[in-house]
Length: 146
Image (tube, rainbow, N blue to C red; front, side, top):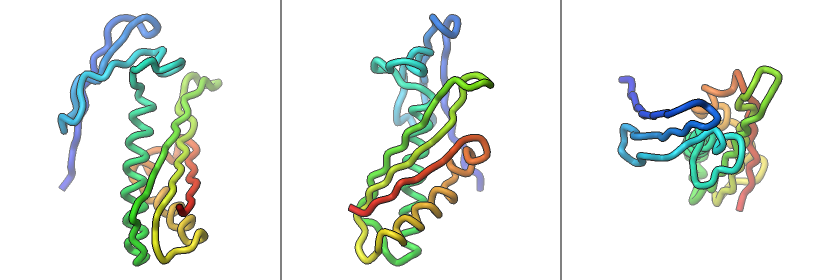
């Protein structure tokens, strides 16, 4: 059965001087998050951006995919600390998301660094957010055992 989620956003004014907000998400987990063009292309000043939300989604998705890979290897993680850095850059084609770089530090018993890195790469490839992004941007993962 397919699962759907939604988000609602509002924008007022032009791109450069206007502002908006992420008004509501289907889970109710967060609401009324301000966003501006400047929060995407300059300092965030306490406002979010679509790229920050994409980084959040990719970090969470990857952590779940990697957890599953480690469990299938009979080396379940005690802890995976994941950071995702999404790059938004002006290219010849205009402003684009160009990269999503994952870093993971894991506490996992019974595994060596080489296998840990291999499974992290598999998780990067198998993560549904990575699958949605891989045709258009560069994806990387740097995996280290704690």
